[in-house]
Length: 399
Image 1 (spheres, rainbow, N blue to C red):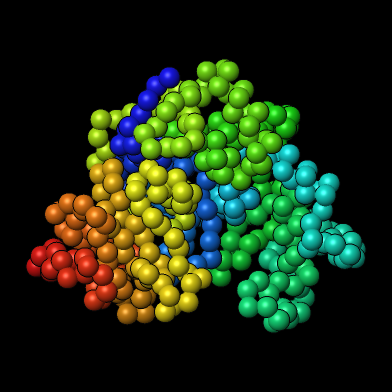
Image 2: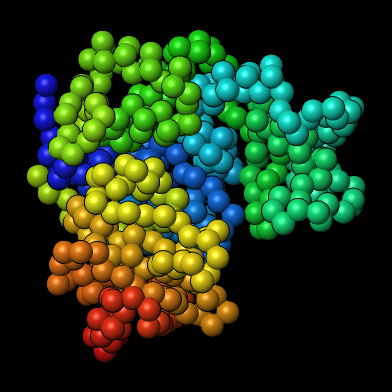
């Protein structure tokens, strides 16, 4: 059995996630498609403190790009990406739609708490209205009725709950997003390319193997838990799929230094001698979203603190790890102050053993980020052991 050091496993993971790919001066749709083939999915989240979550992993790998590329790929024909609950709410390649049919069927068969005890006539009327009039938001279909205000979080109307259930069940698809980030619902046949809809529906076992295969390609090397989590599969689904791919020789059992669980290397995974990455990673980046894996691979303890009371936060509200080479060497709490045209670095912290070049490299990457976001200045606060050195490095860059 092959043995990998922790450093080798890190480089395999970074290569699989696209951090070996060359950044282009002007990334195009082909560059975006290549990048999404690496990541497999792009997680969607409504938090917009810096930039919406699905745009950030592309910037981390491609550099400065026109976000309209992603909007076009996910909202116009010929559609390349489509929304579904692939990891959580995510953009995924449209050719993955048939492999999610087993998940959609499960929702149709067992229902959902959103629909328990509710009048099914609402579903019937919503489907009829969308069939007749085309894509609509839940607000369009609410007929102006106010949303409930008895919950601090998802104050969803009955219409929204029904639409989300129909989306989970595959009866509806998301045709795009409004400027206010609201989903536009429509019939799948008006969203998914006909060639994809007409493909034979895989058996459950075939679908499970394809999801594990894609997870393995995006991870490079992974434990069963990592493979299962990537597309949020049940153990009963992932275990036989892993066994089948091992038997076929697509997954190779390996030992990784410091890993307590058995690991699997995808047979096509690259093992580079070095990785020269430099990137700020969103909290929702697939490289770091499985926090235990992040800790084992990078010796980096990472917890998102958005929902932690301000006085109890350790590093800040919206903290991004900073990847340099094949290590996470720092973390920064960032906010895009669009009204003032400023990228605010509320705090900056160095990781143990961070190289002397960290402040200068981080300053350069923050400059790229600010430029991409259309912000004119970078202001560094006083929190964190890296803040003073980062301010100095930024002055050097700006003079």
